[in-house]
Structure formats: structure tokens, C-alpha cells
Image (cartoon, rainbow, N blue to C red; front, side, top):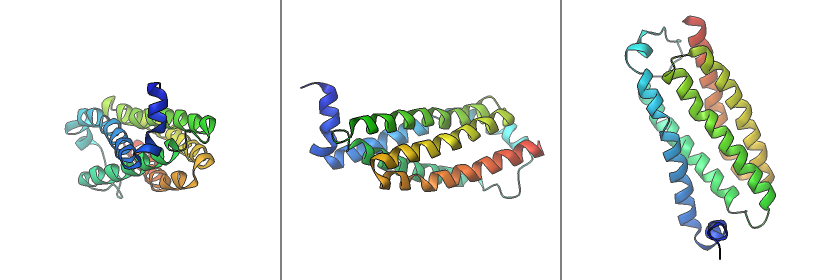
Length: 169
């Protein structure tokens, strides 16, 4: 039996292990964006005029940890259907991966490059890709798409904040 077949069967054979692995994978990849965030925090970020509705910095860690856990759970719900609907699952996973590149790309643009305007362009593309991911997830498991709802709302708020930073600075 190939490794690919074993990975595909893991959700059915050991669903709790597969769920934990899916959440951990998304949390780890998502946390890698903190490298870029750390580059911009401090002198540069503190020098920006902040929008009135900008939450305190301590809010972002718990929010993103929760959102990544929801994303990982959604990915797991899709992944566990790999033997039932391989084409739809493959598409959903590819769209999810592309969207995640843009998720990390926002941190790289906004904080890493300290480019507020570029960050705004990236977050606009990210928003569209989250909607596409929700669509692809819904084709496999509607619950997986619904788990991305809070993420879409948060990124909508973040896009507004990014826009306000751009206007104010």
C-alpha cells in the first residue's frame, strides 16, 4: 500500500489523530506568518496612525489561534472524504493551499515589507480566495465551509483596518 493511500485512509482509520494532525498543520503553517509580523512590530507599526476601531495587539494571537483551529477542522472534514469524492477533495485542498499562501502573503506584505498598500491588495485577493475555499469546501462537506465563516468575517474586518491604515498613513 502506498503512502498516499495510507494518508488518504487516515481520517477513516484514526479520525481523532487525523483531526489533531490537521489542526496542528494549519496552526504551524499559520504561525509561520509571525516571522513577518515580528519584522514590522515595534518602531514601524508603532509609528503608524491607528484606526479608531483597531483592537489592541494582544487580541490577534487568540483570534488567529481560534481561526486556524477552525480552518484545520474544516480541512479535516474535507480530507476525510478523500475516498468518497477524490476530485472534489483534491480541488478543495488545492484552493485551500493557494488561499493559505495569500494568508501568509498578507503578513509578508504588510509587516515584512511594511507596504500598507500592497497589504490591501493582498488582503482583497485573500478575501476572494476565502470565498472560493468556502465554495470548494461546501462541495465536499457543508460544515467545513461554515467553519470558515468566522475567518471570512475577521478578514473582512482586517481588510477594513488595512484600508484605514492606508488612508491614515
